[in-house]
Structures are given as structure tokens and as C-alpha cells.
Image (tube, rainbow, N blue to C red; front, side, top):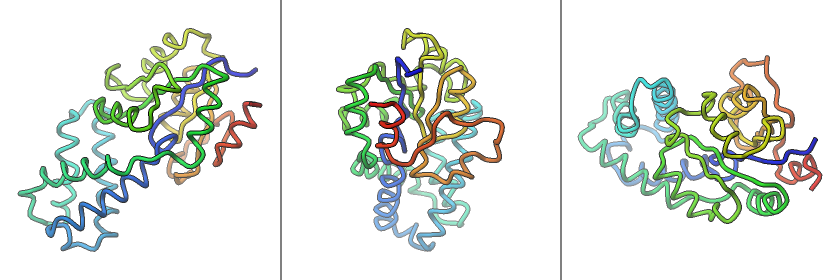
Amino acid sequence: MKPSFIYFDLDNTLLDHISAEGKAQHSTYDHYQELQQVPIDQWLKQYQVVNHLLWESYQRDEIDRYELQSARFRNTMEKFELDTARSEEIGKYYMNSYREYWTWVDGAQSVLKLVSSKVKSGIITNGFKETQELKFDKLNIKEYCSPLLVTEDIGKLKPHPIVFDVATEKAGVPREEILYVGDSFSSDIVGGNNAGWKTAWFTALIDKEASRNGNTDVSADFEFEDFEDLLNYLDL
């Protein structure tokens, strides 16, 4: 059965977060001498570990968004015993730089334009409200999708069931008629499956094994690396 409503994830599904993050990190590294005491590859690897752990803590309500934002550079710098006096300034520089590099994932815009003209479409995204809304504006997502759901407004992050309950109500169709397209296995595929939705796993930008994290009990209804394949799956 074809879906009567399609939700898309935003980061690393429609917007190339990995590319933007990498370019912003290099810009930040080049701008601050404190960071240059550590080789860039070591810095990036440690930052990813720190940031991932902080997001997990945020997801468990152990820290708030402000602690997450202030701690990711500070904690990474502390790991390398760097001077953290300007860590907050560095974090703000990074965020401003990150916004300069937002672009569509290859093929995503044309496919979203076509899909949304045929099937009602919306967005569900984790992340901070102000940042995600700026992304909506930068990519002109409102032209294609409604509703645009940022989980911070709901009070829980994906894959919490309440997120998918709210999204189901907003879609106004039965659960089994909703398809969710996303890159995160735990947040999007497991969350969508648990909600009784169909799921499509976009894997072009991610490490599939790392994203799955040993979870072999759940499978996506469809897996793809090229957005043209999603059109074929939807028979559009």
C-alpha cells in the first residue's frame, strides 16, 4: 500500500549536516590557535565522541541544551589539556560558521519537490528549535512540507513514542499509512517501526553498522542510498 503521508528527517537526510559540520570544524580550527596544538584529525575524532555522549545525556534529560552547547568544545579541549578560557567563544564561532555551509543532500531537493506534490509530506527533526527553523528557511522547506515538527517543542527527542504520537495526530491519517524517511537507525527506523509506521532508511552519508549499533531485531521497509531509488520505491 502506498503511503498517504510521508515524514522526512532533516539532518543527513535532506540537509548535509556531515559536510557542513566538517567545513565549520575546519574553519574553527584554523581560526583558534588553542585548537591547533592538536592535529586536526585527532581533534575531530575526539569532538565526535564528546558530542555524541553529550547528546545521549541530553536525550536522557540528564543535561539541558545550554549545557550541551557549552560543554562540547570545553570538554573536548579538556581532553587534550588545552586552555578552555575561550571555549564558549569558540563554540559560538563554530555555530555561526556551521550555518554558512548548509546545503541539500545530493538529489534530495528535486525528489522532495516531486514527492510532496504527490503525497502530503512533513518533517520531524531533533535539534534545537532556532537552529532547525533557520535550516527550514535556508532550504525553503516550508514550500514543500507541513507540519515541520522540531522535537524540542514536543519535549522529547526521537525515538520517544510521544514524538511519533504527536506526528501521527498532525498527519491525520492511520499509522500504517505513514512512511518515515531518515538516516538514524535508532531514532528514525526503530522509532518509526515502534510507532507502527513504514520506514525508509537513507544510508548514503552514514556508517550503517555504527548506526545500527548491533540492533538486528528491527529492519527498515526500504533501504536506499540514492534519492532516485526512493522515487522508484514510491512508484512516482
